[in-house]
Length: 109
Ligand code: SF4
Ligand code: SF4
Image (cartoon, rainbow, N blue to C red; front, top):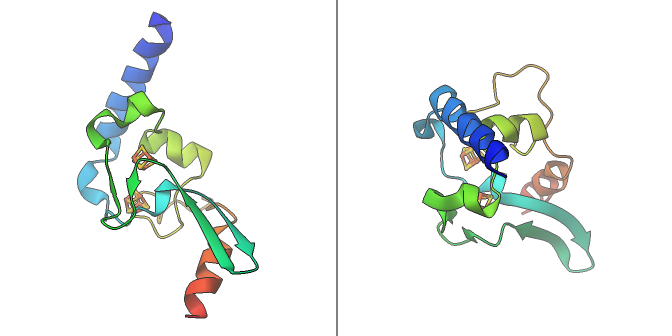
């Protein structure tokens, strides 16, 4: 629908102005969709467009066509880890619950 696309473009523009790309540390952690414990350890599910080796998005320039969120939408949906530069100073921001599992796993390494 044209109206929705127009709004999405507006959201993207505002988001890009408020949250410049340069702040991103390219850790790829906001591209984690889910994490859960299995018998063999922690299973981390990444977005299919993330290159897990480089931690970079393979469709970055066109990512919104693939349903990726703007930073503004990502903050509202709570997809960033708490120490991400885009949210680290937001007092009431809550990171996704599965980061607890990821941190536990990292501590045990
Ligand atoms: S979690 Fe933050 S710093 Fe890491 S890739 Fe995502 S936006 Fe960039
Ligand atoms: S489309 Fe790219 S930036 Fe968006 S979640 Fe997937 S890998 Fe990350």
